[in-house]
Length: 489
Image 1 (cartoon, helix red, strand yellow):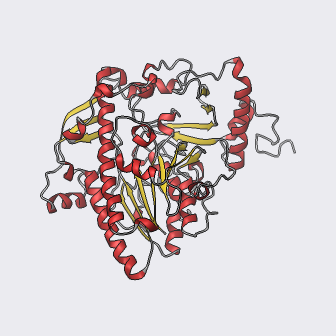
Image 2: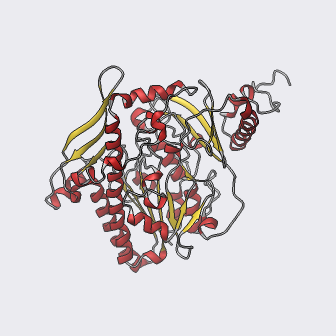
Image 3: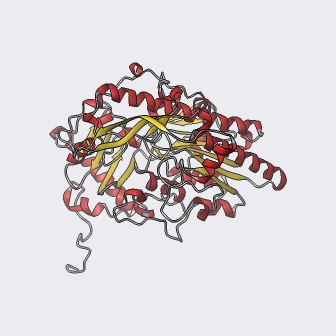
């Protein structure tokens, strides 16, 4: 069993045809879904790059592996996994796998993908490293022009400075884009692994991690203008008032300068984001075509997912941050395993972290060390096993420490925010999460039920966030000494 793991960064689930978008052209990912399994409730364990990617690598929840923030804006957390930390890469190496990773790493400051056994150029950071020697050599080899941008789009920050770059035109042909470069290097790696497999029979795990469609959206004209902004139906949450919600959300909106740009700019940004998704889909098509041409598809499990979502103007926000909305927590999740059913759609709550145990299971390795991961193999085989009826996620901060925990079930979502007010959304009557119903008297039974369930799940996990909940919320009579002392013994 070989593995091809395709991953994007900051990717909204509603930008794919197979997830219902009628405008964005994603034929290659749609075909992957049609020949495999699409998960409709696939979530990130935390909506920020480094912790989510570390959870994929380890099968650990972020609070457990403790890599809690992106290093570029780290606010005092650890910056690398400890040396004894379990990773699925170690298990696959023990099973005789060749390991490759082309693209974004972003799992720590000092340790590279190579330190975990992955072959491939080390491409650090959160955005396309367009000054990387291997990319520059790629451009020279093919006589392609270097990176250059025009028509920059950005808002204005509260202190009057120019805001973060959101999009720009890229003065390069598609063949020179970083996305095309990553796909080319992946095809080359597939060719090497296929040749090695013909000789030694060694299986491979090859990952391609695109840096997009993370902002800034830097695209050639044909993708920058691919979609008419008039096609964009703005989400109702652009009318967000932040009434009855944590004040940090309004602050983040100001940080990203949403209100300093006309609504026409928001439409254009979404249309450009769609163009970015199509560009990446075309490069994924090249990779999947090579897998077919090399005769590897029948013995290769293919995964596609993202580390987290993106706001693109929803809730008057961009990027991600301390707001646990579906826009950034629900992500695409598609998998195709040899012998599995085609065109299957699953509605169980599953997580990016579950990919870890799934990979181990398919490789015949022990899944137990991936302690917060659950193998999706039964689901991928079309079975109906017992499955958790809810999902838990967490957040620890970006720019500043900010602790949050979330529980989501079939209908409701509860978010615990110790610094201000909690949130409770009815996702049936309010799918865009505009109305915080946490303090409404008629919601008391739902609030109590979800608070207790989240409390019990956090305690079972060993997530010490539950200590805050013990005295503050309706979680029942305490069955331990919250002071963690022996004073009353």
